[in-house]
Image (cartoon, rainbow, N blue to C red; front, side, top):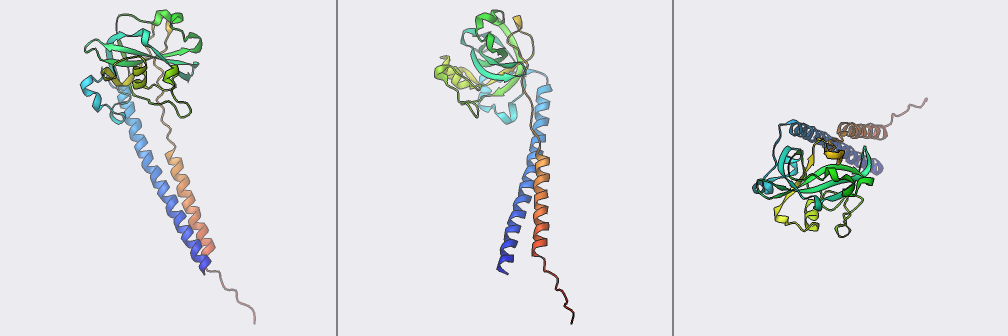
Length: 241
């Protein structure tokens, strides 16, 4: 009898746990679908001016990331930072270049695009070092502090694995108060000489929550059936007289 009670308690706990996980995945799926819809709307929306300094404190990932924005200013080409990455073009670097806004003097980091490892040296791609006033259209992205899951940025050695706006600004000796807390992924407009290659923003959202939910609910059902089978009262066999 005690064994049956223990098995029943374990079965109830497992059943409730699996059901809770299934419900959680359904909620996550609803959140993910809403996120995909919001991002799709932002990316395809008409371009708007990038947030000004007075708006920086309100810029956040939920409401602003992937907004289609535009900014006009001048590149500080001598202060570009290379961030290691891997794309469909192979291994190479994102070229992160500060841009001084023409309307305020504030600075926004621009991810101008990708260059392969053999074009790391700016002198090899001198045509792409655009001078004078330019207008950049692209997608607003939020700061990526610290590094990646596997690699930390090492500012002292100028080795970067994530687009850490604040750390890059400090490394370049820029006034952090004048640097936006976001950066802009430049669009696919071709740069002189063909490099950097812009427009490579990856907008992919893994959405397998429905599969996970079905898995958890299936496990809950299996536990329920297994518990019923194990705990059912066995039939009494009649012995012939």
